[in-house]
Amino acid sequence: MAPANDSVMVVEDDAESRAHLTQLLQLEGFKVVACSNGAEALDYLTHSAPPCVIIMDIRMPVMDGAEFRAAMLRDARLTQIPVVVITAFEPPAAAKLSALRVFRKPIDFDSLLGVIKKTC
View 1: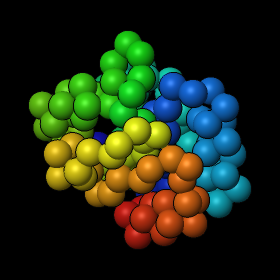
View 2 (view 1 turned 45 degrees about the horizontal axis):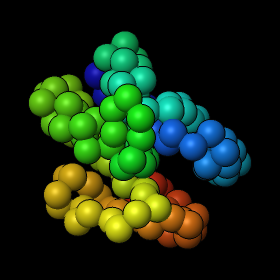
View 3 (view 1 turned 135 degrees about the vertical axis):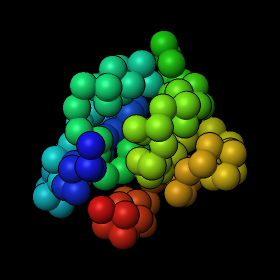
View 4 (view 1 turned 60 degrees about the vertical axis):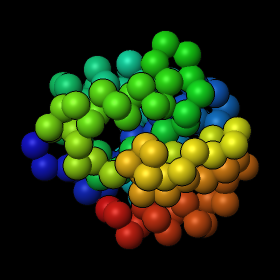
């Protein structure tokens, strides 16, 4: 399945952060799929067209960002979806998660938006 070029997935367990990021992206014209953990995001991805990029937190309940990314990399259909990592903790190297970029919270939205626009 080809990526939906105006669709962004946000995987973030903090409801307020997820809602805020979703709202900002929608104001920029993106369709946003918001998930609260990696398991929910994987379930969505198995039944829907892939987004043009996934923005994901690292520390989440049920399935954290590292587990989610590892599961993505095991599925040939999902390996090519670009991932941007956001974290409040010491950020891992982007290469460790095969991520385009890693942002530390609080996020500079303009910088994040620049990465998303280049990717989508």
